[in-house]
Every structure is written in structure tokens, then in C-alpha cells.
Amino acid sequence: MSKTAAAVLAFLGLILFSIPMSAQFNGLLPGGNVYGGVSYGQLTDVINKQSYRGWNASFEDLPFTRFPRLGLVIDGSGFYRSNGLRQYNLVGGPRVSANIGKIRPFVHAMAGVRHVRSTDTFVYNPLVIDVGGGLDYKLFFKNFSWRVQGDYMHTHYANATQNDYRASTGIVWRF
Image (cartoon, rainbow, N blue to C red; front, top):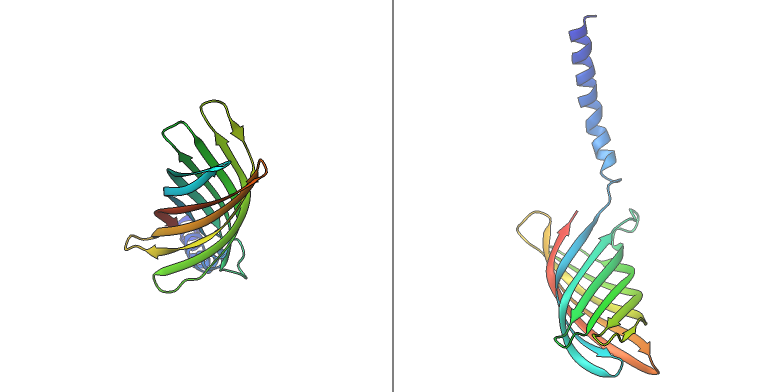
């Protein structure tokens, strides 16, 4: 057998075997999404309820092939006021979703840490519990959606309970 014939057979063999392998490999690739957007919050800095504006970002992985509607989420947000008060949240937990045409509603329950800091070096880091939901609307761009999300965030600090609300909207890249 000549070298040319061996090269052609090797090439054809790779092409023929790569088609069934790509079908099997599709299940191994992770699925999920990345979100980034703007956020508005009615938040409490220990006892005073104030309005904040900021950002919200999250990463969702759908690691369970047997449960395609269940995902794991890491969510981060930052809120700011003109008086120098800053608030950051980092939470994680499960998210359940469903695909209904172009709309993907979801609910989640997460827990994590809140970091509040002011210009006069006042800092506190309570535990935060975040329960909320929203929906993604698939855009005409491939793999992109628009998200509207609402959350209730609960903390307890300095013998006071803080019940906060957050509304966010932004772009989602699905992979």
C-alpha cells in the first residue's frame, strides 16, 4: 500500500469515526449561562431602608444530565449610594427552570455573604439568604436571552432583621 493510499484511508477513517463521536461528546459538554446586568435594590443598612443602584452577575451550570431543569448558580451583585455606602453580595445555590417556547422561567434559593462598607470604615458581613425568580426571553441573536429577575434577600445583624428586595435586568449568554 502506498503512502498516499494510507493517508487517504486514515483521513476517511477519522471522518467516519468522528461523526458518531461528536454525537456522544455533546452530552459531555457543560450547559449553562452567564448573565450580566443592572440592578435596583431596596436595601437596609442595619436599620435604615434605602434605594440602591448597581450591577448583578451570575454563572449557572447545568451539570445533571438526568435532571436538565436543575442548575447550580453563583450570583454576585454590587450596590452603591452617593454617600459612599457600598454593598456586595455573593450567594450560591440551586435553580430550577423550564423551557416554554422562547421563555425560560426559573426560581432559585441561595445563601451566601453580604459585605457592607461605608466611607467611615463601618463594615459588617452577615449571612444572606436569597430567594427569587425570573424569566429569560430568547432573543433573535443565537444563544442570547434577555433576563428580568426579582429577589427577596434576608439578613440578620445587630439584633435587627433586614428584609431587602432586588430587581435586575440584563443580557444572558447561553452555552
